[in-house]
Amino acid sequence: MQIAKQLKDKNIAEYLIYMWQIEDLIRANNCDIDQLERNIISAYQVSDEERSTLRQWYADLVNMMREEGVQEKGHLQINRNVIINLTELHNTLLNSPQFPFYNGAYFKALPFIVELRAKGEKKEEPELETCFEALYGVMLLRLQKKTVSTGTAKAIESITNLLSMLANYYDKDKKGELKLD
Image (cartoon, rainbow, N blue to C red; front, side, top):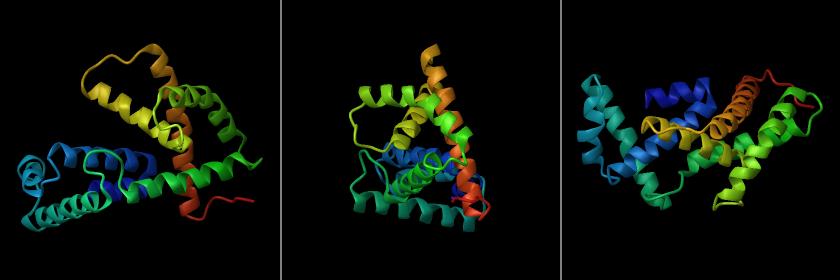
């Protein structure tokens, strides 16, 4: 829970990837808070009070996943809202002549985004969700110690650059430091 809060304050892109991991952890534990307690929460070296808070955080997420029908796949509305907010900022940045470097990063990543969308099932999802899914997929491959092809690594580099810039602009916008005209 503390990690999520810190990431949300520091880097919205890392926060979203982290929250997708949490969703998958919850699924891997059958959306069962007692199983999460045994397999995840008990591993934290924290006080009883912090453990209780952490358990409640996981329990709340489990309840949200059940209520929103995303126990098996999909993302919580709180995480979809991040994509929505980032997409709005992304479109604003693309439509402004003030951010040529962002536009350049986008057009460098665009061929990879188009290719990923053509291969994927969800052609109607926002482009940024496709980008995050690519990053998340590669992260899972690396955790499984599987090889990432040179082509995929090149695509991920461009996508990471784009999302890194977007996360930086998001942070500036949140602090009131981004001048959008």
